Each structure stands twice: as structure tokens, then as C-alpha cells.
Image (tube, rainbow, N blue to C red; front, top):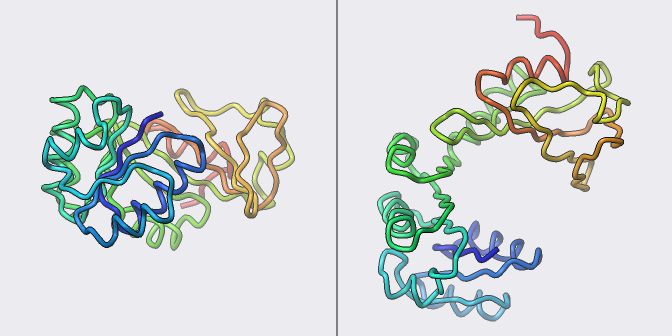
Amino acid sequence: MHILIVGGGNVGYFLAKRLNTHKHIVSLIEKDENICQMISRELDILVIHGDGCERESLEEADIKHGDVVVALTGDDEDNLIICQLAKQLYNISRTVARVNDSDNEHTFSELGVDIPIDSTEIIAKIIEEEVSFADFVNLMTFKRGKLAIVRVDLDKTSPVVNKPVKEIILPPDSVLVSIIRGETVIVPKGDTLLQERDDLVALTLVENERQLLETLVGKINE
């Protein structure tokens, strides 16, 4: 894929580094010239010193051949404008935007951003939900709040431990995306055995979250 990142801060830099390592075509736009020079020295990607809200910078970063645009600036208005330009002028199929102010997440969704990522909300959920549900964290919702990405931590009491993935009956419209085992990320296959202390990442409909949790960790006692 050809991925354009706008914003070369820590998140933008490490995202570009990861995607480039995975053999994607990555370009990046950053306003700060010093940051541009640093990223250019360290990563073999196209780096543009410019403003992602301006067509000139977007086109210089080859947005016309882009598949995904990721807006990661510290300004919500800029991130929204970048995504709208990408959609309306360049027909980009997927836009991802960082939401700095949680109050703006609904606006991002309503105005067509495919995946608004509220990092504050994600961190808050991890903190708050692990207090009450240590084995289940809703990391993100998208597609107008209909889909959720969740993380489930398996312990020795989980009914799916030591079972192959093909034997686990998940709720409708749910899929197991990855297994995090220590420092290793595993793409699940039918004969992959789930183990105690695995962290599972799954995609599900929001209304099926509880059913998914009970399938993976057992009945919830409230």
C-alpha cells in the first residue's frame, strides 16, 4: 500500500518506520524542517517539508497514488481538513485521524473520517476497564460506532485455553485478528492453540462485545 502520513512527531515517526519495514510505500509531511531532516536521515521514505492542509504539499507527497492517509498532527481542525481533502479531492479510500480532543470524535465520524482514533479515550478505557474487567478492554470503535476492536487477556480459567482456533465459535460478525504471546505477534490459523496469558485482539460488532467476552473468558459475574 501507499500510505501518506501527515505529522512527524513521535507517533508519526514510529508509524512510518514500522510501515516502511513492512514494505509499504510511505510518504510523510511535516511542518518542522528540523524534524523533516531527522526523519530523512533515519528512514528511506519521501519526506516533505510543508503543510498537510495545502494541496501543493499533499501532491508533492504523491497523494494521487495514495491508498491511505493518516493525519497525526496536534490540531484536530488540521486533521479533519487533511482527511476531507484526501476524500473529496483525491478519492482516498481510507482516512485515519488522531483526535486530540475527545469531544471532537463524533464530529470526525459525522464528517467522513473512516477511523478517528482518540488516544485519550483508549488510554482511559485501558485504565478504567482494567479496574473492573481486567481481562477485557475495548480499544477502539469505528464505522459510526458499530464496530469495535477489543483486547482480551486469557488466564488459566478461560474456556478456550489449549483449544485450537477452529474449535472456538465466536459471536456473529466477530473475528480473531491477532494473538500477542510475550513479545511475539501471531496471526491466528485454524490449528493455532490458544494459551494461558495470551492477549487476543478481536474485531466485533459493538452489541456482541459481551458475548465475545463470555466466549473467551467465561461467564461474567456482576
